Amino acid sequence: MKEPPAKKNDSSVKGVDWSDFRDHIATAEPDGRRRWIYPRKVNGRYFRWRTWFSWLLLGVMFAGPFITIHGNPLLLLNFVDRKFVVLGQVFWPQDMVIFAVAGLVGLTCLVLFTTAFGRLWCGWACPQTVMMEMVFRKLEYLIEGDADRQRALNQAPWTAGKLGKKLLKHAGFLALAFLVGNVLLSYVIGWQALFQIITDPPARHLTGLVFMIAFTLLFYGIFARFREQACTFICPYGRLQSVLLDEKSIVVAYDHRRGEARGPLRRAQTAAERRQDGGGDCVACNQCVSVCPTGIDIRDGTQMECIHCTACMDACDTVMAKIGREPGLIRYASLNGIERGEPLRLTPRLIGYGVVLAALVSLLAVLIFTRADVEATLLRAPGTLFQQMPDGRFSNLYTVRIVNKTSRALPVELRLESPAGSLQVMGGTLDVPAQALLANAVLVELAPAAMNSGTTPVIIGVYAGGKKLSTLKTAFIGPRN
Ligand code: SF4
Ligand code: SF4
Image (cartoon, protein in one colour):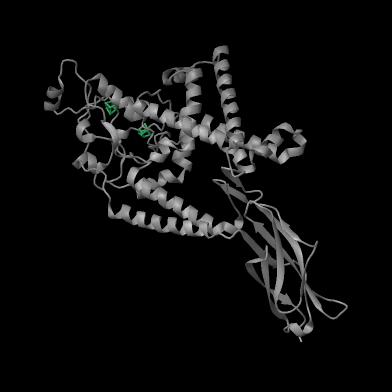
């Protein structure tokens, strides 16, 4: 493989070691040990905008479980009862096709958006980044100070002061993790169930308590220790960058044409003189590296670890303002934008993704708007065959499951339409409560004259308010002639 050209070694920043540049990540020592990252506090316009946006997102996240639409929560993913609510609309496992198409819509959106704008999601809206950078990291700065003081504290011998700070920080982290874990749990079981777990005697909700503790420890572990490794080791989205991004994608990028050759600023040198000497706008101050929460140097180019948090953009803009240069040496730009001044363009790839997305969204809309209000399934009762009645007729036992997706209770009626015979709902009636699933036993009786040898096809109509909602087909088992 051809070696890239050696970089001019005229800066205080460690040059790229091309022999191992892509061989290990920034947060690991070459021997595999963890390299702890101490990102410096950052300030600037992007950080301010991200802070406001994060407050909005956190507000929605914490208020979400309490917001209801038509009496249903905004979002509920109850895997235990297999009941899912999105924007107040209840979905059941029977709506699996809708979930599958919605998943494809989400995936296509992600692909389209990432191809055009890189990892904008990661930096601005990903819960991991928002919680880490806007909540946990801020608490850490508050208790232990900025990066240098944190590093010094970690290297200092154990004293009462150090112990106090560490205990305070980790107690704060645990409290935050408990809060976050409980909010997420309320998206699974609903806030009412969560409130019951909190207020009832612990012995009555052992499973719930185990989940609460597990969620708390999980989030504590992620934000106190695991941190940026979640983005670089675990999250598959980061790994997808290499196939989704191209030279036209807008990413957080260092303008190498403007910045190189980098080198320290000399006091007496004017901008024009520096340019004439072949110097670029990068003064090799390393500020962009020191604020990076994933420990990378964006001047080495787009990297998998970059979560587009904009910290390096703010840090560099501050430096540029101090030395009287234009901001934007590190900015949102594409490689083509930097090299040829090309703006974001609609490429055939983006158009292709857009067409696929439009088709999937249309399909999803059709599926949602034509979704049946009631869904019924009929299965033979497990472990049963047929029985002969004293009058000579034969009977089969079935289990009917009816999902009522409407917000009103529905009295459902089953009618045996073919062949002639009788159908009896055990327990009398099928009154299905609103947004609930009802399972009941159903007995079908056929006279020998109406039966085939062995298996007889049976058709049952499902009615509500005299209106036919659906047709169920099943088999009736009888003796072989
Ligand atoms: S902050 Fe800007 S000037 Fe300083 S090293 Fe980074 S790119 Fe260069
Ligand atoms: S390179 Fe810049 S945008 Fe990317 S993670 Fe580091 S600080 Fe954030």
